[in-house]
Length: 283
View 1 (cartoon, rainbow, N blue to C red):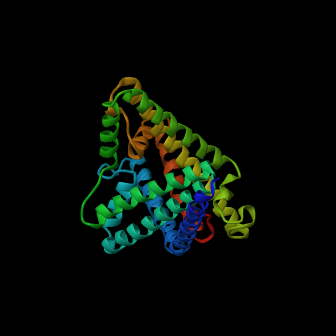
View 2 (view 1 turned 90 degrees about the vertical axis):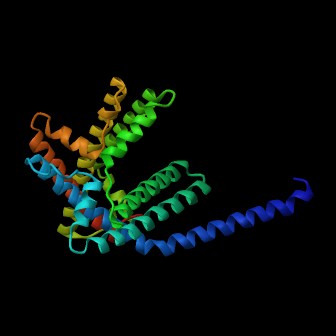
View 3 (view 1 turned 30 degrees about the vertical axis):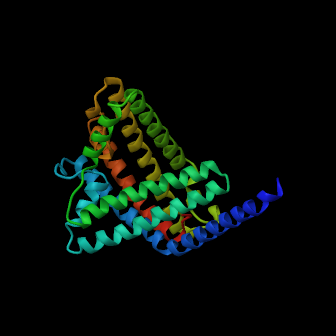
């Protein structure tokens, strides 16, 4: 390297190191609030599970079994406004923590972990935005948003193939979650892996709750992915759907009532696992 470039290169390295240090400090400050985001996620999953069981048993016609439906249920409680604002703060903190973690992993050249952190960060921030809509007295429909996005994708060049690719990707994620639920990889969610978490019967019960929860989430996501693939094959954006559409599709399948009840219970159990992650989890 020419001598004239050495000071600039050194300054660039120092600036990068300073930025990384500030990012790590910000991540540490956010962690206590970010852990509350798991509590919020747990409550929402329990509510989604209750709504799914209600749909399976013939009720819940006015509610959607997804995050929008769960947030609507929270909004109708006596302390709903306070709870929703708290949810906004906690979910936003968890989303920002994940984005910072993804950026740090990218700097460390770990592309897989970086993509995972950035993806989780965007997901939690979108959920925080939905919670903000409800906290401000508005409402939101995940299904309408899914239809709008699918229609926009299909209207773009190669849109049908893109929607099909999205469906296959979601199917893949659903398959991985089913695999995770059927394996011991659930412990990867905890700091320290196999040695972490509650002990004794409580620990075993928590682990089974996590496994059942991942299995239920995987089944539901696989149905969402299948709906996108069907929408691509038929070139009809209305065939696509989100979580609520997947739940209602399940109830129409053979043994659908029992299947949807099982998925609803699984979602509630995943909520319990989120509470465990709030205390012992790897963010």
